[in-house]
Image (cartoon, rainbow, N blue to C red; front, side, top):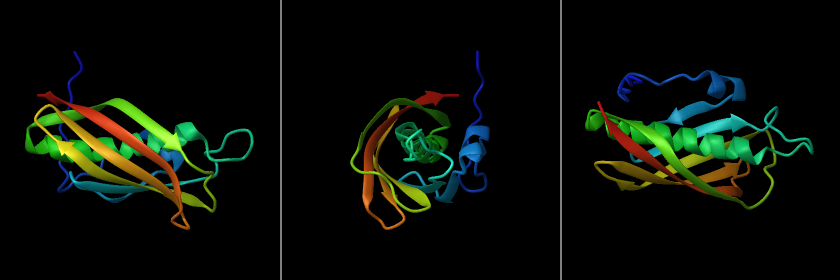
Length: 136
């Protein structure tokens, strides 16, 4: 059995090798709203555009971080169970920003709407992420 340690949003920003490789940075973090950024390069597909999978990873990372802030209050941990997104346009510039807003904060799940924008604040993707809360 895997043992999870709850994250304490008051003093601990988690690190992840994948997030570090992709250049993801936490700007702000709470159960209700989390903001993260990611550089466009080198996270591109063969045509030089930001990879759609990278956008979904950024969205899930932000929502999961927010969900863990909520889960911490319940002595739980949060893990992603569903990610659904639509890519609306190609990102331009040097980075994208994911803004994760809580839609539902329950005892067993948390759901977030994530808006991913480019540095000119144009909407690139909309994503919905649901996380399951697991008791310790």
